[in-house]
Amino acid sequence: MPTEKAPRSPSALIRYLSGKWPIVFDATAPKPLKIGIRDDIRAIETELSDEDLNTALRVYTRMATYLEALRPGAKRVDLAGNQVGEVSEAEAATALAWLRARLAKEKVAKSPKPMAEPEPVLEPVLNLTHSRTAKPPHDRREGLVVEIKRRRTIKRQP
Image (cartoon, rainbow, N blue to C red):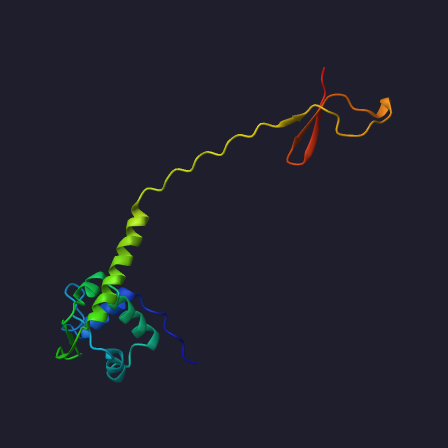
């Protein structure tokens, strides 16, 4: 019975791809990838599972340096490093939106959180009247009735 391999880390997957295709997968200076490069890799590469390949491409194409490389008119490359298309205006706008959203999220995460106002201390409300109907004197309790969170406590006066 074959055992399944544990999924690799995204950085290990990107290192694997950059070792196999160093011209195309360069994390320091990424180039826009060909649309459909996943199918090209899948046709050649049999060592990576679909899940690992999807993870590697997702992480690589969402890196800030890759998104910055997606400028209108930038040349896309295939696995051999050949130019096979250009980045459209819409694709560049989408990449810019991703970057702006990420920067805004980081800015919110780094900003100091406002201190919450301390909750006011509530003083118990003293009920100076007897809370029960009149009972015979031998059964009546003396003192003040203090109500806190629906509990009744009776404080005896000395």
